[in-house]
Length: 404
Image (cartoon, rainbow, N blue to C red; front, side, top):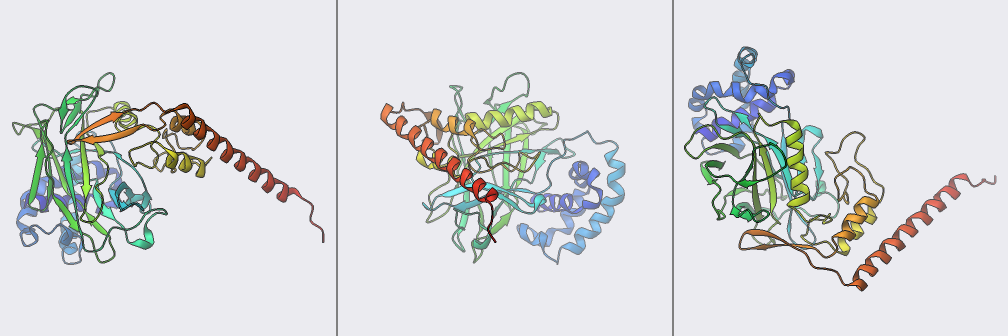
């Protein structure tokens, strides 16, 4: 029941678009209507997707009208919160090898789809009892006509599930929930005394810093076209049920689906509101460089010729001006452009792999043989030379006189 109420609260948060300046406080304010929502949503218990259909929208509109007047008053007393996108999902598709690949689906920016991505980050809001709460990222998959080039839609009518993984970081032990207080250098430690719960409908699982993974839940069946869309609920408390410690929390998950190879581990940073924007960015950059193999631009767990080909194939492409959220494929260093810096990163980590052993993520490095490295350098030089020749040919064609 609480899950249905929270799901509707998340829906309202995304619906009240005419008061965008109030949105960061909406989830806190909507929490004040928990009793009303609990009783009114009883018929829809356990059916998250029904909250989006026409049968529920009239009720949502009625509550929205109440929120219209209540939120401005409650917002005066709400703690300042970092603004963030309202609707942002994990994207799950498959690569040509039949392995699930993770990415992003940003509904606030025209359903912008980016594959592959393995590091995600979201803010958590506060409920009235002090619990940190979120309903993003959701999980989504798109139909074949919308899948980004080079990838394929998920199989139809098939359950997509996730598991929570325990993993190691820098010799600090093994944990299924990691924590950094946002002070000084990024330094994640097992989140002792904290509890992170993820709920799908009436089912929930939790991780609390223990050195063991947790079998997850089925998110949803795909449709007849392989698409899906579902938002779970995330709760963060202390293990005693009180207010969690302010900071950055990191979990690792793995997607699975019958008939497909499991995804590589993907990492999500959940940030409480008291953490500075600078610490937020530091944690993101750290995770991108330390939790995935540097130079592994196609996210298959190894740096090899496939990554080299992707970098060279996207040579000199850039993210939209002033926006590094939508990074081009091949952007190994996440600076918004594919250039020599990315090529150097790929070659500098040549043949490095990420291995998953008993649920613990371990980074292993093998030193390339000189001949192998030389071959990679030769390939890079040849492709770069070909690109320069093609550019010169285009310029000659552009400025050549035309005989009429």
